[in-house]
Image (cartoon, rainbow, N blue to C red; front, side):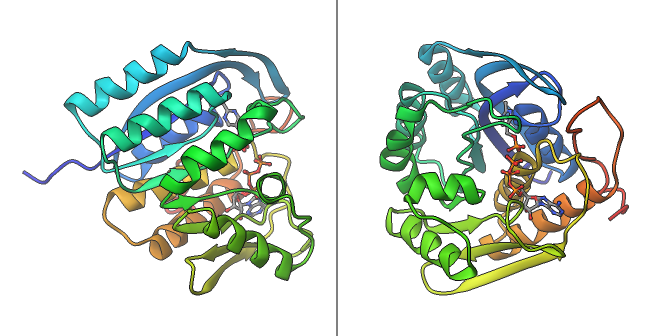
Length: 268
Ligand SMILES: Nc1ncnc2c1ncn2[C@@H]1O[C@H](COP(=O)(O)OP(=O)(O)OP(=O)(O)O)[C@@H](O)[C@H]1O
Ligand SMILES: Cc1ncc(COP(=O)(O)O)c(N)n1
C-alpha cells in the first residue's frame, strides 16, 4: 500500500469556511493529502468581516499538537492565525520537539476589514521563535512591512525585504503580490538565499479573495508534504490559487471565498 501523505495546519477556525483551518483542510484534500488540524482560536466570521475572536487556552493548543505528534506524525505543516506570543512559543516548542520538517509559516496578522488576528506584541515572538524554523515564510506586502520595518513600494524593496527575512533564519521567503501596485499582473517573489524567482499571473478583478493567503500557503504545504522542492511547490500553489480566484463562486454579501475545487477539476 502507498504511504498516505499527511499535512497539519495550526491556525484559527473561520466559521465562514473561506479562510483559516477550513481553507487549509479543503486545499489539503483537493491536493490528495490527508489533513489534520490544531486550532488556536475560534473566529465568528463571514464574508462581511470578523464578528468575534476566541483564542483557545495555550494548553489546548499544545495538547492538540502532541496528540498528532505522538501518534500520526506529519510530512509537512503550516501555521496561520496564532494570535498571541504564548501560542507562538508553544507552537515553536512543539515543532522542535517533534523535529518536524517542511514548515510553512503564513504570518497572518490582520483580516480583510481590519480585525487583528495577531496581537501587536506577538510580532517579536513570531520573528524570534518561529521564523528560524521556517522552510518557507509567506508574508503579503503589509505583513512583510511589519516584519521588516521597511516600506515596500518597488520590486527592489521586495527583494530587500526578502533578504531581511532570510537573514532572520527563514530558509525560503515568498513575498506575495496580491497587495502590490501592478495593475495587470500579480507577482509572487521567492528568495532562497541565492536567487530570486518570480511567479507571475494575470490579476483578477474580484472582491472574492477571502482566504487567498491561507489557501496559497496550504497548497505549498501539501506539495512539500509530497516531497516536492520549494520552487515546484510554489508553482503548484500559484496555479491552485489562480484557478480558485478565477472560477468564482457567489457566497455571502462581502468578500467571498475562493473556489477550492477549481484546480483539481481542471477549471483553471
Ligand atoms: N486579484 C488577484 N488575482 C490573482 N491572484 C491573486 C489576486 N490576489 C491575490 N492573488 C494571489 O493570491 C495569493 C495570496 O496573495 P495576497 O498578497 O493577497 O496575500 P494574502 O495573505 O491573501 O492577503 P489578504 O490577507 O488580503 O488575503 C498570492 O499567490 C497572490 O499572487
Ligand atoms: C481564522 C482566519 N485565519 C486567517 C485569515 C486571513 O485570511 P487571508 O487568507 O485572506 O489572509 C482569516 N480571515 N481568518
